[in-house]
Structure formats: C-alpha cells, structure tokens
Image (cartoon, rainbow, N blue to C red; front, side):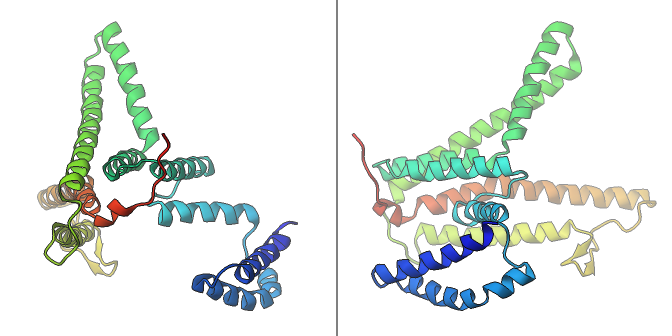
Length: 275
C-alpha cells in the first residue's frame, strides 16, 4: 500500500533538492531523468517493474555492501543487515582517527576480519574446544589430529592478520608520501595486480570442464574408466587448484594491501579529532 506513495515522494524529494540547492550537475541530471520516469510510473506499476519496499531496501543494502563498501553477498537478510551496519560503522569510525597511518592500520584490520566467514571461524573454535575436551577425557587420537588441524588454521589466520597490519603500516609510513607516477612503486603494484588477476582467471578456466564455457578442456579428464590417465590429470588439476588458492588467499591480498597503502591521497583524508 505504501509502495506508490514512496516512489512519488522520492521523485518529489529529488526535485525539491535540485530546486533549493546549489548547482550540482549530478543532481540536476538525476532530476531530469526522474522527470521522464515520473511520466512512466503508471506503466511501471502496471508491468510490475518496480519492486516492493522490503525488496528495494534489501537490494539497496546489498548494492551498498558490494559496490560501496567492497563486501560480498550475504546468505540471509540478518547477515546482510549486520554486515552493512558493521561496515558502515567501521567507515564512520575511521573518520575520527587523526593519523593516516592509524586509518590504514585500522581499515586493514577490519577489512581482513570482515573478509572472513564468521560462521566458519565460530565452527572452528567450537570444534577446537570440543576436541580438546575429548582429548582430555577419552584420549581420542582422531580428535587430537582434528584439533591440531584447526589450531593450524587459526594460527595461519592470526599470522596473516599480523603480517597484513605490519605491511600496511610500514609501507604507508615509509613510502606513502610518494606521488603517483608511471615508475612509482604503486604503479608497479598495479601492474602486478593486473597480472595476478589474469593468471588467476586463466587458472580458474583451466580447472573447468569447458574453456570459456564453449571448448572442451584438454586438461580435464575425459574418461573416468582409464585409471592412470584420470588420476594423472586429477593430480595436475589439484596442483593448479592449490597454486590458484595460494595466489588468491595469500599473494593477491598482500599485493592489494601494498597498492592501497601506497596511495598518496590517504594523507589528505578528512577527519574529526575528538580529544
């Protein structure tokens, strides 16, 4: 019932904002487009093109999370709302940090934490606790091995987290003031990132059954009945997959952190210092 009045109020609000504010080219262009769209509102309503309010807000939050805040799609509305609130809170909190080095370290830490799967981390911690209790009570060898695997994963994440903070802080403090040029370190890191993107994309395509979704992949096993050939090609694909995982989980994040930490514009970010 509120869908049609809401869209009308949005059109009117944009028009009033354009009338009573200074000359803003983007706002003026949006107002002109919406004037044409206002005439087509009955057609949109008749065709059911415009979404209801709940779907519109959820879609808007998802676009804000993915495009504006660099997040990933969430599997549920509760997770989407929580991730948007945490991401927006992190961006707002960085506005009150007076030092650019502090901003870089703070955003790097939260960016790393938000990139992890919280349910997976909680699952790992839960099973570590249960396995430790099982080892103490029953001396279960399988539980002991599982606990060691989980602890290795947790230690790996903590190590990567510490190295990411160290890299971001040192690079920005030592080299962050350099201006961007074709021979600067930031430009070199941008070329490295493009190469990494191309290499990871090629490795992903090599592991698929069809290359580019059209051609049959010659590296993929054709017949599972031929044991030697199947096992050999499976080992090759497993090696390619492991190499791609290293590039995507270790090399690429550190390269991206280096590229962003070297940005000279970070020294000119607006901030509010609260004493």
